[in-house]
Image 1 (cartoon, rainbow, N blue to C red):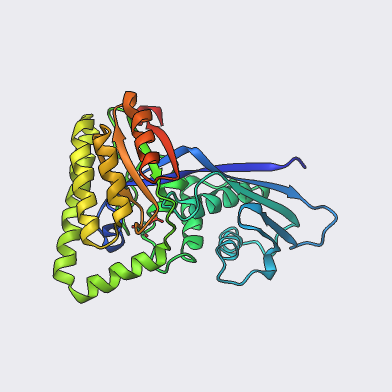
Image 2: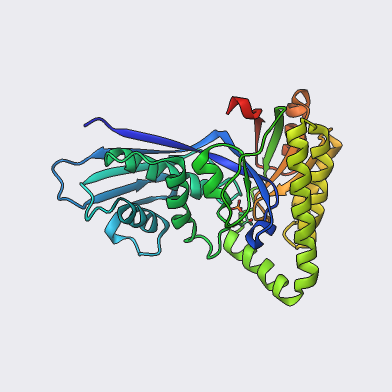
Length: 318
Ligand code: PMV
């Protein structure tokens, strides 16, 4: 049997992170220039149920059954087994690699899971729908933090821009005009679980104030969806800056991230904000396509360890 492979893109959250955990809307888009890839090969000579997982990027080579139950890969493959109602896996070798920066808000964990489960479904003769990939990927996301909103697995499972409200059916926003982003990795690694729980502590200490911040973030996401629909790319820039300020009030920015936002604006960006959990990770900047390289240079000069230029297509092209 030939090898089966599947890939999944990275992602960024355009608007609404953190508030999305509490039921407010958020918008995320896939970043297809960076991807996770899973390759599955049958092991005809190995006993059934012997699943060898090989993830060189994280130095992991193990039998599935030697992983703790709570491990993201164990959760994922157990969820797949339950979902497909199969008692055991035929023996296979599963290799996963990824070009998505790890722990930087680009959904590397969700993309690895999505690629794995998509490849495994096909290998088992049960190709999965996007919805199934998104649902199963959610199971592995729970290993990273207890209360994932579901936005990462959804945008990566469907591989198109999403308008996401926790607990509601996913919607796909209309994007009338393509736009260009420069994503700058600060090189500072932060645990999503830790940042989400710090926000939870702040929320529980002063729910009125923090809910007010979330409400403002939610209404920025609504304004942004309208701007995307109208093709009003220029309107997105100020909304990004406002969203960044609100995230800073949630204590999830850092001086290094604020500095990257300022550097991008000084280099001619139309808007900039941190993206994802914060306290490190990425800053995303909206640019005119011709300015992308200048802004990327300015970000690298200001401490970013890596930049990615990505073009978000209009909805017709997804
Ligand atoms: O995994 P990250 O860094 O993209 O952050 C996830 C976004 C949060 O809103 C902070 C958490 C969540 O579950 O949506």
